[in-house]
Length: 389
Ligand code: GLA
Image 1: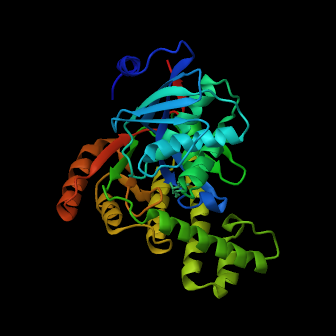
Image 2: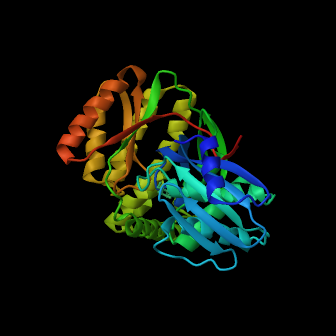
């Protein structure tokens, strides 16, 4: 990654100084430790921000124009704040436009700006580079225009940008953790109340290791929407049968599923079972972590993978292989796919003494069997969006 000084040099070579406010900001990617496909069911998730970011440098303009330059794509996109059109071929610019659109809908007045951005979050691998771009854009605009947008409100507006402008029907997790992540902590997010608790993750002897399968997540959008529909169907089914309020699968217990779920189609039953048991696993994982019981934490991670593989059916052969290989290594307490699925990454809890062996063995076996060049990132809980000094 280039240093800030070098980035300002690039900025100044590209754009004349407007004399107006400027600043540099960053927002991280994330890895979800446990709680997959629960956020859009009003459930619980436990992600952490990672030390990979998108960095944005920007200066206000005295007109309504935005000039956005992506260093990594070597491409500049110019548009007016008054004319925000979705352009398929400018795919990254749509995230920026979407965020601006949502900020404008909130009735804030903003000025045009010149900006450059760059990042080290691998794209399309399930580590939320798009959420990071949305969040860093919102953070930059809010800071330079003095908008008082609270953190959760900012995460929600970024989610709306993705839902409404980009057209991806995601939940709140990725934008939330990118905005609110705290160093040394995972966040237990209640995706109904949008409140969070910090869960210290300073696990001395163990580290979070991310394996990137390098499988492009091709089917993800259509399958994702289909899973959401199946969950809504199950939720409506229980709302009609249970004698308490059911707004989402969050409100259904395992006992209720077993007792009353017989009338559901088999597939819908399994989808519901994943969500309901996954919510329980998140809460159990948090209490295990608070007791420093990493063995239990790791087991829950692995159970989560099996549930995603068998009941929710969002894994793929490469992710299953990575989990299987990981669990054969010494010093591994748990392994699972992370993110939406159908490719992307796995997350593993590995003892520090065995990380080198883990990397060497898993990579060799995986590359040999799949012909792909797996990437590994050893990471720790990093900070959420922030201004850079
Ligand atoms: C994607 C979405 C999130 C969440 C996960 C699955 O990352 O953006 O909102 O639904 O998939 O847990």
